[in-house]
Structures are given as C-alpha cells and as structure tokens.
Length: 161
Image (cartoon, rainbow, N blue to C red; front, side, top):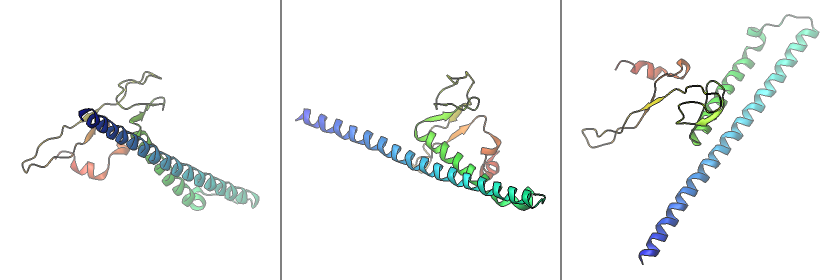
C-alpha cells in the first residue's frame, strides 16, 4: 500500500507543477497578446500623426506638437508605460529580469549579465517575521539601487519611518 500512496503523492505533485507551469504560460500568452494589441494601437496613432503633419504641410500651415498632437503623444506615452508594465510582469512570471545595460533577458538571481558582463542591481529580501498577534508579516523585496521612476508616492511617504 505504501507504494501506491507514494505513487499517488508523486502524481499529485507532478499535476500541481504542470498546472502551475500551464497557468504561467497561459498568463504570459495573455500578457503578450495585450502588448501586441497596444503596439498595434500605437502604430495607428503614429499613422494619425503622420496624416495630421502631412495635412498641415499641404495647407502650408505650421504644426505645433503641444496644440495639434498632444493628445496622440499622451496616448502613446500611456500605452508605452502599460506595455513596459506588462513586459515586466512577463519577466516576473519566468523568474527573469532585463539587463539594464544590454537589455537581454537574464535569470533574476544573476549578479552579472552573461551577455555583456554588467554588474546587476541586487535586491535585499526581508525575511518573514512572526508578529505579536501570531500572524505572518508580508515578505517584501527592497531594491538597493531603485530607479527614481520606479518609486511610488506611497513609498516616498514611508521613507524614514
């Protein structure tokens, strides 16, 4: 009987691992499809910008980015930020990160990029601690060298607390 119990446990573990990987692949595929849609929308906006610029050229009018194209540029900026967020989420699903020097995908725990040799930013991980009321505190990652653009307003308020 022990053999069948062990076999059942191993089959259950294999199922869980397979289901987890399948879930990650499905999520990554959805993220990539959304990124593709956003990129197509950006291309459409580029086309609109080109048409507006050409119309102004034909009419021999001056074109002002602030006046004539600000909405399109704002939309491109927002969509580009969303694409970047989705790309980071895809990397996170694969336990990867992007080298800030050569932009290659590398393992999250690499200290140096195998492609260009650049030293990677290290992250400190706070250990899980037992709090007084016997509940677990959330584990958080803290970047040693965060980019200023990655710091949220809430994180700025919490500095020094």
